[in-house]
Length: 416
Image 1: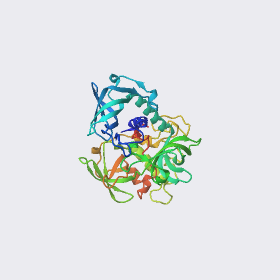
Image 2 (image 1 turned 120 degrees about the vertical axis):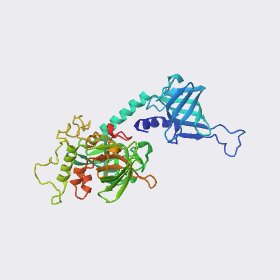
Image 3 (image 1 turned 180 degrees about the vertical axis):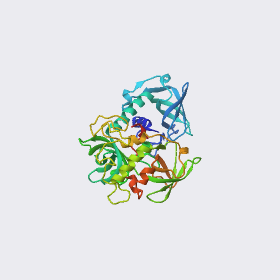
Image 4 (image 1 turned 90 degrees about the vertical axis):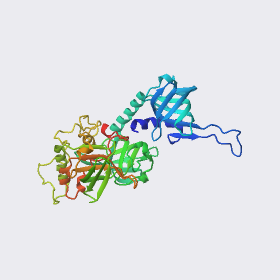
């Protein structure tokens, strides 16, 4: 499920009540102390995307469950709901023949014992085009009003979280302010997907967590009044590949910071990129420039690197924006102004697991994982040899913090 599916669930959840499993049964239980002459049939509700339509049988694919064959009864009512509308009184009656593959429906009726079929008495549909339009609006809103970065401080009493963002002008701290109406979500340890996130609080956020927030920023961009927050623990690794098992979809990495071997899984959702050599050299120059004087590898105070407040891009081109309110929208430019380092990285060439080999230097953002599942690659960047060579201890290689979730929640980081 991606951002689009999350939109669907949001708009249809009011009809289900509190967030519930995809298939929910509510049997008509006997009244307290009373005996019914016959047990009433169970009523089930199911949300899914239409995969096929054959007469009055609609097959839907539900998230995390089997396909369900929904037989629409002759007396069933079929309603079209506009995304954002929360009252079925405003839904529009439609004919069953108007449903299309790709639309999302919520079916209610009598389910079979195995949950694979249903005799539906009510169908509520949100068309694919409507969901696409709304999900695109949400994605654009995250682009314009969202921030992302690692957490550097948490003050639960004051209701604030401080994150650090990185651009070619250096690092910047942003104070994310919350209120009682701010929605806080915590990612699952084995998933960066918002539909797997759970309701959370500021007390659950820790220093080092990755955080995404959406809201209104102040004039200089140093504070954001958050309407919604997604946060979780996503470790970074940087080092040399020890082995690649393309069949199993795994990589063994020797992490430069911990000096330990790390086993990482590659899935269809993992994003693999290669940083071009010229860009990697520019990153390496910034790492050297930021090292304290006297540290081996530190750059001399000369014109060999860009000044700390430069907005130069790795390829030598200037940034299209100069800060909040800037108008640049070129590659790597944030629509609200300023340079978006994460977007630039996400636009680097994609590679396949077969393109990675033993001895390659990589930087990885991964899930925290569980003892049973282990860590899974979210983003992997190869071609980072110059960056790692510029950082004697390895930890400085992460100082630019380019390996963040970025983007809009829902795995759309590459589409910001």
